Image (cartoon, rainbow, N blue to C red):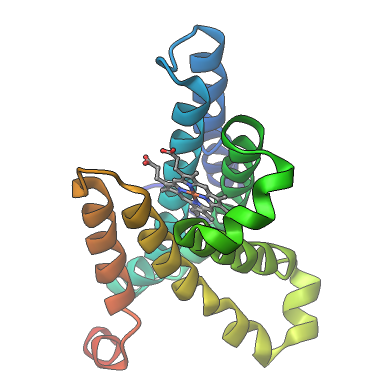
Length: 194
Ligand code: HEM
């Protein structure tokens, strides 16, 4: 059994989480991004951000099932990776699919962009309040504030569904995974697993 408390485990997860970034660079460098590289890159970074969001959300259910809090020590790092990839997704959108001048108009006029933007604002607030000093300063309010991650997850799923053109299989699958992870937050489920 791997002892998750070991420092090297943290580093392995930290370095593995850079994998999608390395993949993006590699695909761009080798011309493996298809006919519309900008769009492909933005989609890849969006999915990566969502995957990190779901991994972060899965740590509490994992803690409840295994009755061990060890995985929680990776929560801040994985949550920050979600923000990092979301930031790259938005930057990619501004560089390749839109421009800074139209951004405000997009947020106001295209509902799926509005939702993505709201999710991004939430993730930004959570990232900036994640340092230990902020946890101490906000005390009990920190927990309340960080519950906004559930809202962010729902916003991202709707953003994903809304931008899908014909085939909605992928966003529906991600939506179901999100729903299952959120079910663990219900008091009745928490009571059963306690
Ligand atoms: C200001 C904020 C955001 C903007 C402007 C934005 C923009 C976009 C755009 C334009 C697309 C469609 C790309 C295309 O196929 O043409 C997209 C898709 C997507 N976005 Fe965002 N997004 C934002 C926030 C977020 C956030 C915070 C997340 C996740 C944490 C996210 C996750 C996704 C996902 C999963 C997709 C679907 C990718 C796919 O089709 O494979 N987005 N976003």
